[in-house]
Amino acid sequence: MKNYRILARVFILLLIFFIACCAKPTIVIKEPAPSLPEEVKPSEVKPPEAILPPIKPPLVKYNRYTLGCVLPLSGLHADLGSKALDAILLSAGIFDGENRTLWKVVAEDSRGLPEGARAAVEHLANTENVMAIVAVTGTEEAIEAAREANKREVPLVLITSKEGITSLSEYTFQHFLTPTQQIRAVVKYALDDLNCAIFSILYPKDDYGEEMVKIFRAEAARIGGKVERAIPYNKNQTDFTEEINKVTGNLIRTAKKISSKKTEVKAQLALDFEALFIPDSYQRVSMIASQLAFYDVKGIKLLGASLWNSPYLLKKGADYLEGAVFADSFFVNSFYPETNDFVDAYYTAYSRDPETIEALAYDTAGIIFRVLENKNIQTRQEFINALIKVENYRGATGNISFGSDRVAQKTPFILRVKNGKLEQVK
Image (cartoon, rainbow, N blue to C red; front, top):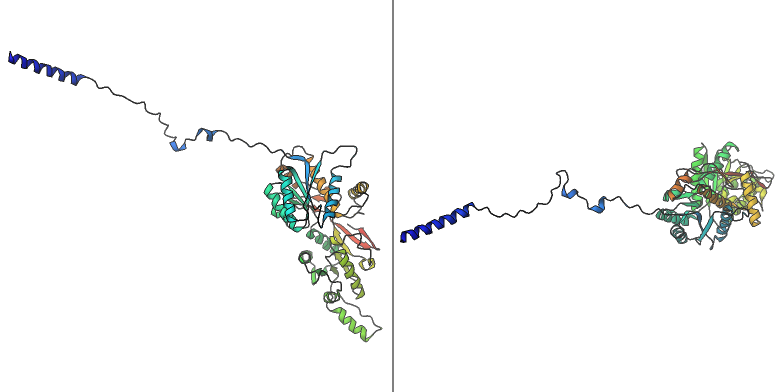
């Protein structure tokens, strides 16, 4: 009986062992994350927002029928600014009673100051949102205006004599007969029409005078001519005896000595140059011309620049200037029909004759309006591209073209004193 119980327990243990070996275990398997194709690495996966097409900023809509103007409407040069504004309004058709003009003119006062010009450009570009700006400036204002135009990316057409101003900004244009253009025209006329190739210069001792001498020397050399002497003088002096003596090679003093010994013999000056260039105002030119005559410096041609062009040039001592020649961008008694039409329209509107600043402002605005008549031009860059392509615009100041340097190429007015009056010869 006892053995039976032992065998029963052994049997039960074997049965439990057998069941344990044959049972299958419960295994929990987690679904693995789907793997990426081999050619796509995790680092190359872009977030959803990065692969969406870029959102284009809204197109800026410019006030394409509004012309911005930066003018010295107060301060030392307020008269120039006022005259320029009158001409721009005339060009815009403000006085055209039959047809209502499309154009609007917004003028900002620069006060003739660099900071004023800069602020005016900023306001017109950002607040008024104009397509283009016209500015009448001196040298320092021109530099500041050009820099601000570049910053604001607004087309700016400067009426200024500053050489090289367009190099400061791809948005800046210049509409002016530059000193280089003036001198080139005068030197060419002197050679071709006056048969003069040997020159001397009397010039004011300032930045303007130095620049004009530099340009004149270069232009004379370009045509195969030369400059014998360049004699400076102080801006405020009225007696030019010493300078005239130097420019003639000390011949005045020699002539005086000879004349003092033989009073019946008048010494003749054998000058070694054919033309004398005087880049100064009409007032000083008149004084120098009269003193040249006093010292019997004759037989030479007097050449000048646009500063000579004044109604007062021939008020006194016109005889001393007979045959003198200079260049400018406008002449009120020109034989060009476009000039005559402008003079008539201006006189009808304002009861006075226009001067150079009005003619330049009138043509500048006219060119801009002409370009903007093309309604396909909707952006400032499109305006710039179109303005560069302007060729042979016939205006009050002659033929005008722009090019890649954005400096207006103009037809100079060659003016000569004849019988006490100014006339246009070319």
